[in-house]
Structure formats: C-alpha cells, structure tokens
Image 1 (spheres, rainbow, N blue to C red):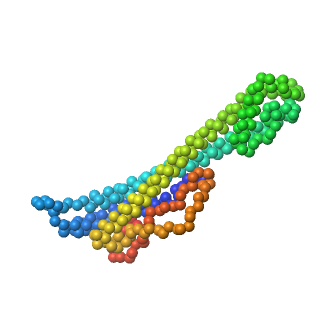
Image 2 (cartoon, rainbow, N blue to C red):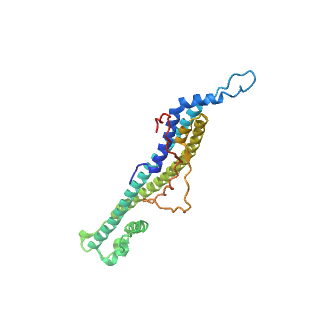
Image 3 (tube, rainbow, N blue to C red):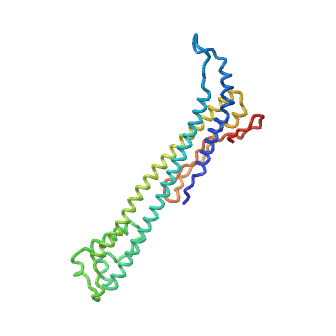
Length: 285
C-alpha cells in the first residue's frame, strides 16, 4: 500500500507555504507603503506623537501562522500514514495466523484418521472442514481443545489402530490452544491499531480544516494590505477564488483496506495566476 501524502494534502501545503513565502518576500515593499498610507492619521490623543503601526510585525505573524498550519498538516498527515501502514501490517499477520489455524486443523484431522476411525471425528470436533470464517474457526479450535482435554476421551474412541498411532491428546490441545491465543493476541493488536488510525485520521482532518481557514483568511488579509498599499497586481497574485461545489451528492467509497475513507478533497481556494505587470516577479512563485 502507498504511504505517500495524498495529492490534496500536497497541494494544500504548497499553497500555504507559497503564501507565507510571498508575505515575507514582499514585506520590505509593503510595510513602508502601508506606513505612508496611515501617516495621514492624526495622533491617537492630544500631546501624543505619530501613530506607531507595526506592519512588519502584523505580516510576520501572518506568515508564522501559515508556517504553523503547514507543520500541523504535515505532522498529522504523516502520523495518519504511519498508522495506516501499521494496521495493514498487523492485519496481514493476523490473516496469516488464521491460515495457520486452518492448516493445523487439517493436519490434526489427517493425524487422527491415521490411527482412529472416521466415525469418531465428532468426538474431537474434527468432523467438519475448517471454516472460512475466522470466528467460526476459532470456535472449532476451542471445541477441539476442550474435548481433547477430556480424560475420558481415550475410552470413548475406537482405536488406536496400532500402538504407534496413539495420539497424546492433552499435548495436542496445548499446541492448538497456543495457536489460537496467538491469533487472539494479533486480533487485539489490530483493534488497537485501528483505533489509533481512526484517531490519527480525525486529527488529520481537523488540521486540514484549520489550514483551510487560516489560508483563506490570511490570503484575504494580505490581499487587502497589498491593495491598500497600491500594489494591485501583487494582490492579484494571491487573490483567492471560491470553487463552485457540485450539486451532485457525494458517494462514500470504502478505502481499499477497509478503513474509513478520506473525504473528498477540500482544498483551500486557488490563488489566481499572476497578471503581467512591471512589478518584480514574486521570488516565492
């Protein structure tokens, strides 16, 4: 299975990091122009000096917020991918244990028939083939273990056919029970791993929703600041557009390994392509 980031996660990170880099790159141009725009305001109160507005600090905080959001998305996405791989590996090993149980069940039946009568298979719960359903197979296995430990079992059986064909039923019960216990432990590990995967998925989705909100609103703030500074063409580069949602209802498609499917991508709005202008090109583009 793939453990790479999904395409929508990569696109979200790319757009968020682009906006942060653009904000820092153009800060030396934008902040002085904003200071000039706001210089027309009178002092805040009588006897006070000109207003000291920290446009570098404001824009720097916006870029820092974008950086935080990117890290959050990247870390939660990575944790989810790790959790998915862990579930896949444990499920594979659990299924191998199940196949081992089936093979052991068949082997026991052959060993029994080599020394005892077929009519007595029901006395040791081996009359039926191993069930394809693992829950039923576990019950078949438990039945054999219980009956094989019955001290009166040898007296009930017609056999062994020869002294060398006699079976040590308590030892066989211990061996089979150990295999069942290994399967049960693997199944317990799988349930815990699935719980961790679902928690990681919830954290990833929350991080992407937060990233969408941060990206959308910081882009709007920065666009407004650029326009207020008279840099309309620069503002056009980061202007966002809201995608039109389809009226067709979404269908839930299960993930290949049975886990909850990730929802349809909800990317942050796309920045419009840069317009041709005489301004220096964005170094972060």
